[in-house]
Image (tube, rainbow, N blue to C red; front, side, top):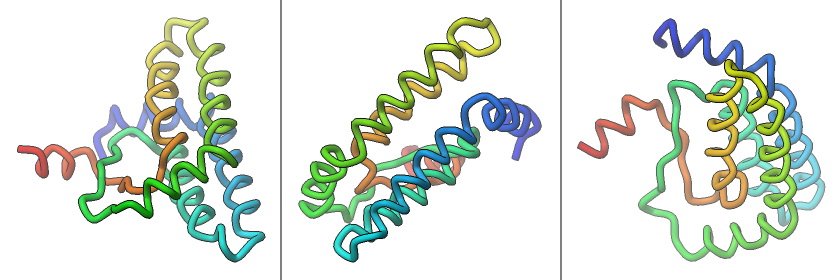
Length: 134
């Protein structure tokens, strides 16, 4: 990991990473209560790890994701996605009030699509994502 990414991740963790990761863990625990929704809980725990330490990693579309991911994303949106996206939006507002927080506010807003439809996406290192594209 590059030193700048490490510093950005520490600042992110202090200002919004912990709170948003806790929201994803809570969503994952609620999803794991029922057997049918355990895959949603696993996806939520996976995203919580990404939310804790996002710089240096990114999400890419999985090529093997099919119609099940689409249906799952609709169910996720109805039960958890919209309020997690709202959490990202509300967390970004105070970040935009300071000059240092502006990049973190944008990063928070960039995570809204992931919070709305997490299934069919994979978290990879940024270097791997660039290598796969070019």
